[in-house]
Amino acid sequence: MTAIFPETEKAITVYKSEYAETYYDPITDCVMIKWIKFSPSIFFREIFEKVLPEILKSQPQRLLLDQRRIKIIAPADQLWLIDDWYFKVSSTNRFYKVAFIDADDLFGKLSIKNIATKMSTTSKVCEVKIFNQLDEAQVWLNQ
Image (cartoon, rainbow, N blue to C red; front, side, top):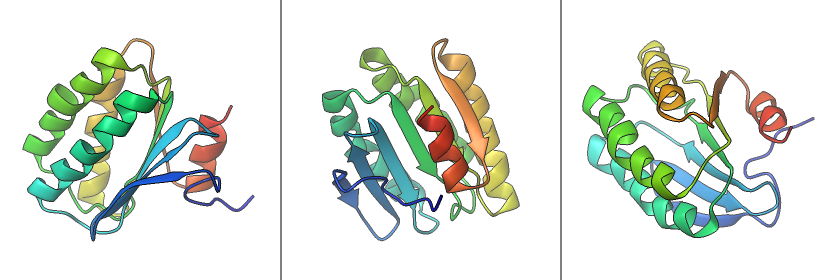
């Protein structure tokens, strides 16, 4: 199986920038964020803020974060992602599965592992896994 991003032709582009592309796919009920390159803190947060209204509107059960091109996520941004953004999302929506495609960079990997661990302990109904390949993550999300 060759993985595609987004998965179906019904996917809606939520937001695109030079740093990331975000989609909502109603067929797979998944929000997808694909990082294109490292982003400074202000743009990292902007990406997540831009996709938030679609998440609150569509109430997807799955989240796919393709972090392969992330170099590092600053500790302050990691805290913000869990304590602020994920708190807003989880107050009205329950992701049942969150898949990360691991970063290529060692520091990015450490950032992703930290976020995934905190996310899984924050939510009692959410499964969080880290994958090396997009197609592995998609298979798991669609099970």
